[in-house]
Length: 435
Ligand code: CA
Image (cartoon, rainbow, N blue to C red):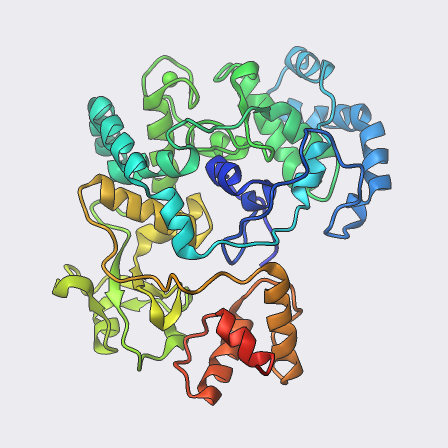
């Protein structure tokens, strides 16, 4: 999968794990070391090696910034932005070149699934979420009635994305999206984001000085990209403005609308924690392998705590983030809807789990293999190269562990007589090194 800028960007994750790389979608959750201090551009070429990310190309594009913005006028006009708004908003814009460093930052260190969950689902966050659900009870009642989306999931998105607004970013969205629309390797994508941001200001839904957020242009307490705002934002409190920054009603209804349009099924949950037997064929633990829950039961999966599945005909896929040593999860359609909101399984699982905790549920029953550590980027690359040397097709080694790498690990594990679950552990790397 190519690296896409996430449709929704968790500022919180950026703040906790620092750097913009966590704002990019990866097959695996990624964190990274802090970027160099300060808000200035490093002046260096980007790590992606993309021709538009060389220092020379960035300087040249920055020199032509005004000409580039002017070239976006026809597209803005087609979206109904007035010339007066356009001129007023671009007049004082200067590119924020620091964003070029963030766009290309490569995460060296990664956190494990359970480390992310520990950070995102805390007692403090559960407490705060329950307070907000109580405080805005009437709003959540109305939003739930109108959209059929579970209030606990909405509150959990609020909590995971920005810690209920405590960390929502301070970069002007117009400036960030204008920079990315005119400089660097994602210009096509960001032109629409910039035009959408202009449209928001032109329609006076949100004042330009309130439109601040992440370096990638996500804003508001559930982190809308401008184009997502364009598609999903609604005025729920009836004042004529779609103010996802200043109105909790607009914020929660717009978030619910996005989930509903993403395929949310009213009255259903996101998934179940399940026990996976060691003899299970882990090849089936794949987002593409959707089947009815009773089929999964036939293969030996059981819901934790001995509870029956309420609707055995629902379709689900199996996620086993830590292999045989950790819990499994059967993911329903609503998990896919959450992933449309935020396309990393770690975030989506954190949102589902925080929602359950807000509702009064308990922690996951099964233990995570906390003795396992996440491999660094260099180690993941080495793992792929060592598998390649043994004749496995892992695609182009890129440090991202996709389906081919997992399949190779499973085969290697089987040869060692271990459970072939495809989990990239440090001990597998050691075995591949011949130790
Ligand atoms: Ca409103």
